[in-house]
Amino acid sequence: MGKFSRTSGRRGAFSEINVTPMVDVMLVLLVIFMVTAPMLTTGVSLELPKGDGEVIEDADKSVDISVDSKSLIYMGDEVVKPDYLVKKVKAMQRSNKNLKVIISGDKKASYGQVIELMSLLRMAGIAKVGLKTGDLVDLEDLKK
Image (cartoon, rainbow, N blue to C red; front, top):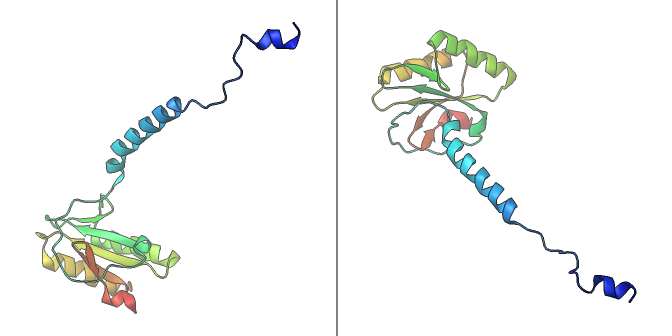
């Protein structure tokens, strides 16, 4: 009766991995990310006019400025005054010489306000300023 009689009634080690707890954790994480992802988007809700243009390349190296229907100017989701905006963009341009500024104007925003903001940025020495229209961006000056 030696070694073999001792283990003949018992099962050997179970070598399969139980993936059920891992699947449960992954599903919980998926639900959490699905709920929180829409909250992570920042900015102002605008109704952009449609236009023909080319998609901007290197959009991650740009500053997005928005003008809403009440002609309030936003940098991200913060309301700013034009003079403060110019100072902030110039400071950002010092650290990134290829900085691009994209102005998004609501369809109901004052056209004059958007153009005045664009002109103010250009007079301050910020040459790469463009307008965002719908999903496309018209940035002929940025190609230079």
